[in-house]
Length: 130
Image (cartoon, rainbow, N blue to C red; front, side, top):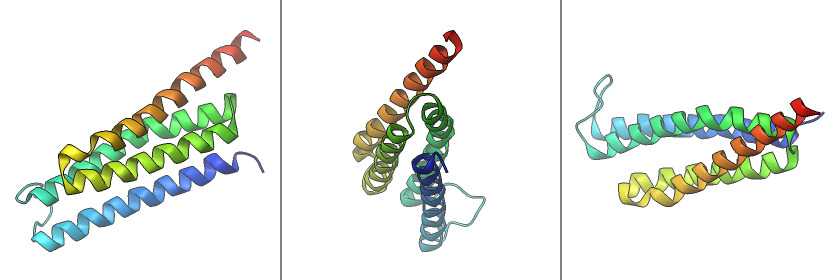
């Protein structure tokens, strides 16, 4: 079987999404903010922003991961995917504590997406030219 590392990272990304979703639910319950209300307590608002920002980032990350894995390197795709995951976790923890502490995690994840995207683009173009 091929692409084991990108597949693992993909499954871990789903688990990250599930964990963040559960965090939103716990935070809503703790502060008695019932859906569909999205405001009322800063902790709930932060949890919802963490969730939405992670969904947005995942939307770019997963295709970039798989294109990179297919056209450049499965191994490096896995490593860069792990960097993205760690960056998102760091982002989420920092943001929940204090929104000013989200930048480092964001930059780590964003950097991984940029490398995966540019590397994947180069790989695809090279394949088209050969």
